[in-house]
Structures are given as C-alpha cells and as structure tokens.
Image (cartoon, rainbow, N blue to C red; front, top):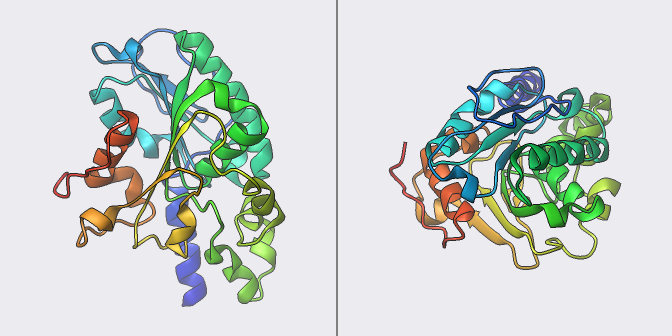
Length: 267
C-alpha cells in the first residue's frame, strides 16, 4: 500500500507540473493555448510597465495545469508565459536550466523587457536557481518566487531506494533532489541569493512531497513565507500551492515588493 501511495502521489504531481522544450514567446497579446511546449499570453491595462512573469513548472506535467495560476496573474495585468521543463523534467536539472536560459532570452526579446519575474513551482525553483547562479541569469531576472521547491532536498526522493526499487528508479532529477546530492551541494555552496534579484520562498506545512518543509527555504536574505504562519488552519498541499487563493495573495505581495500579508479567506 505504501508503494501504491507513492506512485499515486507521483502521478498526481505529474498532473500539475510542466514538460518542456523552449518555445517562442508571443510578441503581441494573444489568446492562451495549451501546448506541448511553453505558452505565452498578454493582457491587462498597463501590463507593459511591469516585468513579464514566467511561471516555471516542475517535475512531470502539462502546461495547462498552470493555467489557473497564469489566469490570476493576467487578471492582475501581468504578461504571463508558462515554461514546461524539457523531457517532463525527469532529466538533468542543469540541462533543463540551459534550455530555460534560452527561453528567458526569447521572452525578453518578444516583450522588449529588460528583466522578467519568475514564479517557480517545485523543481522549477531549482531550475531557476541554477540559471541565476551558474548561467548568468541574475541580470535578466527581477524577482524569483518559489512555491514548494526542495532547495535543500527532500527525503521523499529517497523512498524508492528504501523500498529496494533502486536510486529514484533511475530518474536523474529525483536523484538530484535527494538530500545531500552532489547537485544540491553545488547549488547551495556559497550565496543562496546571488545578484540583485529579490528572492521569496513560499511553503506549506502540508507539503507531502517536500519533507522536511524547512528545506523549501533559502538563506542569505531571502523572504521565507510559510502559509500557516498567518493562516494556521489553511490546508495546502504541494500541488495546492499552484491553485490556492491564499497562496496567490502571497505571490501578489512578492511581485509587488510588499510585505507578505496573505488573505486567509481567499479562494
């Protein structure tokens, strides 16, 4: 039963995270469309005054699963694109970050923006951080907001080994998200928050995929926000961070450089 629960949880995660090869960002406002690659849409009065927002997906999913979050952002006047990780995010995180670097360049060229803001879910936060730290991305990003990203690893990634199924069943990204992996040791060496980027992490106590949940935080001046600090009875799971209204109000604050003051009753 435990193995079945793990597999069901992994399948659920696949429904909300993003596969991806880089796609060309639309240079003009256009209706959103689901795709096997990234999608871009623009709307909102005065949206051009703010940085475009890229929603960066995580391990194994489809772009359409991030549409509710993208729709909220568009409703607030942001220019929004969704980036799907290459190969469903199952492969090397550094390789995903290199592809993401090209995508950021495309979005900046298409919108004329000097910088973009990143709202990254789960593995997408690690892809974003690798881009910022190792691929010269700090000059192209104004804000990074991560939602349930295992910055310091998760013991959930070790469960397959515990059950005798092999090291993450051979999934490279899973191996890299294991606590104490060589990838994370390198990523977390030195400054957690390089450059002039504003870093915000958002996490929840009910995150079933990032354990311990404290590993979803960053040091060196990042704003680390726990949903239940303000809203102790709010129940938000790992996937719920993308859909939850209270969490979205925290994203709104971070994008506006405001102190985090969530609306505990938002839907």
